[in-house]
Image (cartoon, rainbow, N blue to C red; front, top):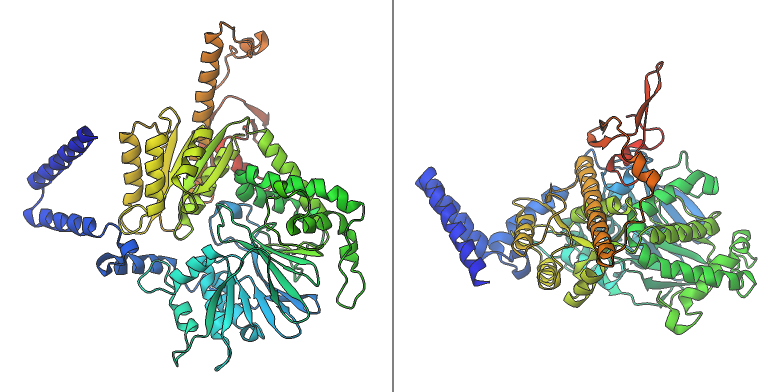
Length: 631
């Protein structure tokens, strides 16, 4: 409004007057020059202006560089899944990043695969940049005809570059297969003076003679790649967390390559790469990965799982044929999985009613194993994994109590995305559904519809060129226009230099009259364990604010119709009047710490000294009480 603009101008004038009164004239001139330059290059990364883009991009790239201690040159474990498909597993038994999904501290693995046909071959999935050199040294990786980037993350570009650089001089161009969003990531990595610029990829993409050594190819749903005696079938599988994700299936062996889906962050001892020990050995790891990354998207996961379950009954009756092994005999593993995986095949290939189909047409048969990007290759536990996924999803939706909170964000390098994931986990622990929403893939109308059905929201963005990314500006405009001022909110974001984005979002929402459930969250470069813990606690605070608002609304509704509060019994009211102790419980694990107020505290023993503390699931400190942790 005109009044708002005038108030902002008055505030700026007062700040400028105070600065002139208290600072040397030369310092004021430097501040003014900085402000003028910043205003002139507000969208430097979008417009390509060298004055700001070059320096900002260099800082971002420097922050993403690996230190010598991060590089893991150990060769991978090679495992033949069939005579023509080999898995290469890079195991890491220490926790090197602080994303929420690594919180179990069981290590992890980066899995890559190579499928070789009679005439052509394809590498499936690249690995993290810390394993790039070892990935490029895999025997025959430079001879493949295709490299399928099932997940084209910026920190996988070094491995892609290593595979291209390993090609012999004069070799044909290798085709890099990816989804359309994945192609955009790779194209950004190939551009100079860009935050995602990857010098190794630029050097590998074009040879010293100036000839291209690789070219991009965007794959579509149900597109097939012929390798001679076998074909690979691809489908896009975008999610808010991974908008570029694609799946692949080897039609001859029936193996599904699912990248992030069905992964687990665990590194088993020895050279085992499959799920030896089954559900008993890895069930908790699959559950932890699901809780961290898929539970916030339970409503999107549920339709797919429900169709799998309904179709599996048909498959169990023998509608599908199990795939033959490489020598023509039916695989014992395939025989065991004919029911559930046959249903999956029919689901993806278009079986069932057309109006009920959600997943794009892809699979045309059964699958003998699931090959994820992390953790064990699933061969003996496929049925259990699908069954438990269904149960977890149903429970997550049932506990949501029709309340949802939107976590709207955009992430340039994955740091803001990691913060969003931690906030969503804090929300989900309270029983309220968290819907993660990547605004880079959304229209203003979709954001408006999201705000209408959610009871609260938080908005996250990185700082690019001293300002908000364009998708977040668009989302913020939709929020200001259509948002409900009574719904609690919050803002968060990562930055590499100045961090104006969080301040901009906070100011615009405050000026619009929105109420904040937690203080703005800022993270410089990569989030630490302490930062992610704070994000999780803030998500819990936002969820509790939504519950408080919902309870107030219910009380007002009952009063409006003249009904007494029948939800509280006489016994509950009496127990609530019992006077007990009120304690401050503090927790610390390594560099991460938290605290809570508790009333259910009692002594358990004198020798050794022990206490019992009751901690609700929605409390942020609950994550400190995993079995085996030292508190």
